[in-house]
Image (cartoon, rainbow, N blue to C red; front, side):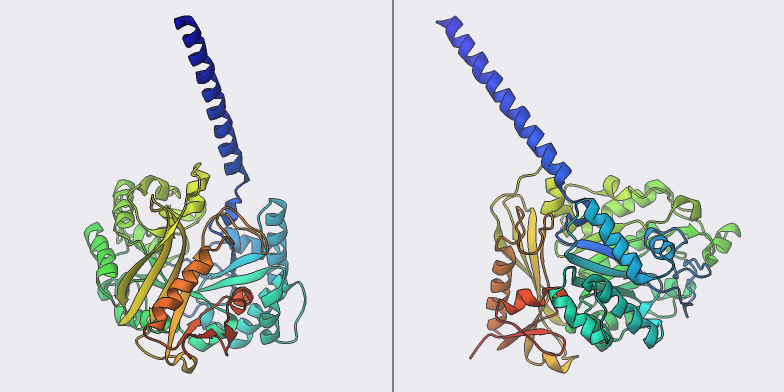
Length: 475
């Protein structure tokens, strides 16, 4: 009997191991199939702005003739633009075609305008540039900018988000709304007036607070660029400034890019370095600083990047390792990107049932509701940002609560299809919860919607005003 039992156990054990091997192969296959460039639910498309002379001269910023300010000649987005003879339509089309060949869904595009200060360019250049971007996505010409924007609502490649990088002292809300902008990233660098003056930033911390409040009350998602290790700072001061971003309600951005200071060729800082007036932090100090910052970042914030993507040959001093995020990241980090389901699936995680959770906080004198869809392991499937604004900065928003962001994570699914996380009711549930909360204080709600998402909101009872999607909650 014992022999028979032993044989049975060996058979069961062999079957179990065979099943485990099969499951492992299937997980590895799924990981290989995940679209690398659309792992967060959309296809991010970085677009370098026209190489127009920048009116500002920050000490750390490199300047190359005929290259968008703050970037180098072979920065990826700049190189694509340059290789296409500075023709933005061809640049976008070639990028989309390449991504499609690699199997990346490109019908939901997150546009990110990088380089210098776009809003400081002449109006004619800006409008022509934005028009051509939409025409490239629409795959057809338009008579006017407004016509091109409108056509994108039902285009093959829809701009579901548009991000503009700018300075806190160069803000034009209505101009950005006309372009279909949904996110604004401002170069904050440091929240210390002495440091900002030393690096010739040209504005102080008060302007950062003012811009943050204005952008949030207009419904934009707000991102900060912070630069640890600037001249005049120390690791202790950097950490204290970072801590203040989350304890002082005048700041509290939604997204963060952490760019430890690099000495780059053709920047004023290169001269300071060679004269001995500036010395970068050692790499182990930078690594520890980034680790501590990631752990300090609240759950309602997404750390988009850690380190700039500058080719090594342009770096005179400072860390040349662009993988510091992976080394600095901790499983204890609660910021959004560390918890996204798409990145977890890349590591073999299987999606699980989710539930909604709401976190309230005060920011720029308004009330914020951060509603997220998470599972039992705190893995993030989607989020919505609802704001009760402090001031009415656009007449259209009077007596409205405003949704500043709705995002469902996981590998991007094409419009009209489903993935394991997208188009499965998560966005609908988040929107319903936000409307439920808003209804307690407001009769109406507005959404700052990407142009390519307007149809989604129309199907849920929203109508387009001048810039925002609106819905009556009462009466």
